[in-house]
Length: 170
Image (cartoon, rainbow, N blue to C red; front, side, top):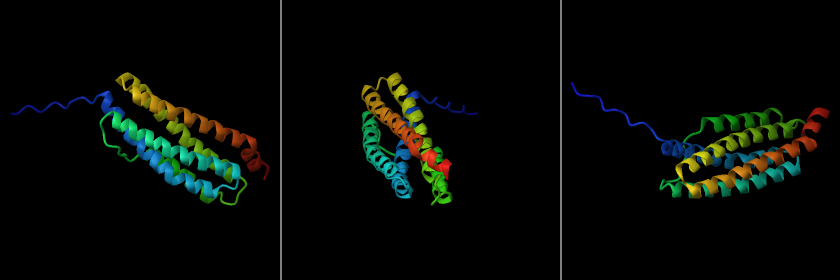
């Protein structure tokens, strides 16, 4: 009777690569979603924030491609069910609250769900890159992590500045 081949235990570098593919897919999905959100909003300020974040997201995708290059891997995405679910919720808000005073508050909520997911992913990837000694990747991932936090803060300012009040007053 032949012995079964023992399965090689997966290592942190494989987990890093797998999670990198996940966030790459997520960023590409977000790139296709942001213009829809910008079009749906009733606020010029929120529209600008979504448009600026789309431009920022393009640069973040380029950074991810540099991280793939740093680990000698081809840039490719892996379906991320979490981001699909989050963006579907955003689409549902756009549909259900179209023309409503609560629309912008809902769009901000959906966008912040995306930001919080990205903050979690980039924070983890940065920590793993440090553990793996990937100095270039650490710097690239940290730059994006800081941008995601700034975007989240900007969305909070817009929500507290007018969107939530408008949704409530109506």
